[in-house]
Length: 295
Length: 281
Image (cartoon, each protein chain N blue to C red):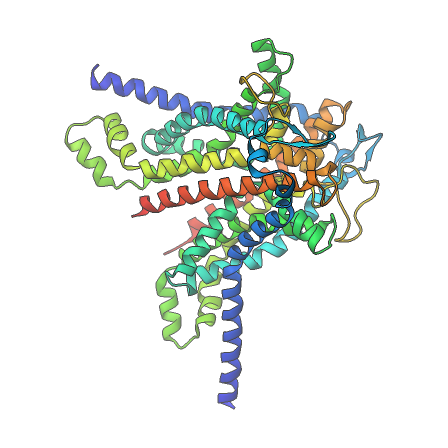
């Protein structure tokens, strides 16, 4: 009796362990599936348009006859907006992280962390909406433009959206710097600021780089907000005060009008492949730096 | 420059930067609340849209978002918790476990619109579910999987090692130990992660664009194979695609979405706080 029951228990245990092992590996499975399905639907465009033309041709006219699938304007659109967002968010974000981690008194620290968590929670479509309703008109009046939906509007909106990522990860890295570093610096006669800037910030560099990378990854992948505030003109951008269109916004805006399996459809999936690869690389690098901090 | 003066200037600049991040958040919340609150009536929340969405309510969009979020959670929570159990309780530091962790990081970094493409390719077309609540829920579920796994891992790791050692030494099996000595203490943390995942799924637009979201439907969805309207997509539609929607309707819709997401997050924060306070080890 007892042994029979033991065998049942062993089998049950075995099955549960296998289920757990399988669940554990599903993340790998999903990453692979995402890549496979992007390739499956997207690769066929490269039979019609060579990769170099796809990446570097200057015209994106997917529905004219004959269609032209050059994503250079979209790549430049993404680069413009991402660059603008990085210029704004990296210094401000790192400075905020230093302030919150090292200088703010405990009460203020809690309030500011809550504010940043709140920002992370606001859906991107709501941020896009408010950017469109308030920031757009402001920029239009400020620079005397015909439209306020420009690369600059997109950069500011996205800088704001990258903040929670940059601040929270940089703050973790700063907090993780051993206390003895600070004590040694203070004992040597350094001021609080000298300690913060030259010792703590220096020691937290790998984590800060990871924070910046992840923030940029977030910005490149952001879709709804950027689609609502950048004006969506698929032209090669020449200034920050022009409407631009990003890679992500193009997919979101045009997929609805395509014929399943058609050229336009697979061209949009091909853009998805490019986005997937870019974010894969950025996240990989960020992860390497994060591990360096832990050691 | 004297070190003290330098310090005063530097600290003021840092404070100003933090101010620049936090204050606009409050401004956004205040603007949306002030302009949206006049639209918030019982009929706005519980009526169907009328006259080309220019009047009436947003009930189908709210209901659709509830359906999608519940579907995503039903799929992602069991999978995510089991996955975390594997990583914390079973996996050794092998190439496989490192690969899994890398995959989770990457899953968290995939752009939301790429999830939309993936969902379109696999669920809508390959499995033939069509644009449906099922396709949308599964897509959102995979997207929030990293959130659930990460929160569950933290919760499991915070349970002291001694709990496991005592249970094993009393003759309990590995699974019995996990089931009875570890999981009960990790539940609040897992729940916190689940609620954060809910909030994330409720607010995302890009993954549901091609997998489920409908511009306008005259009636409510009847099964998981039907399309549905959804709150974030509805906000996008009425603010960019349809002209002549009154401003208070737009702000009202934004406010409802914002309240839904923030209340979920607030719930998670309160839960986490209570949990930390009660923890005795």
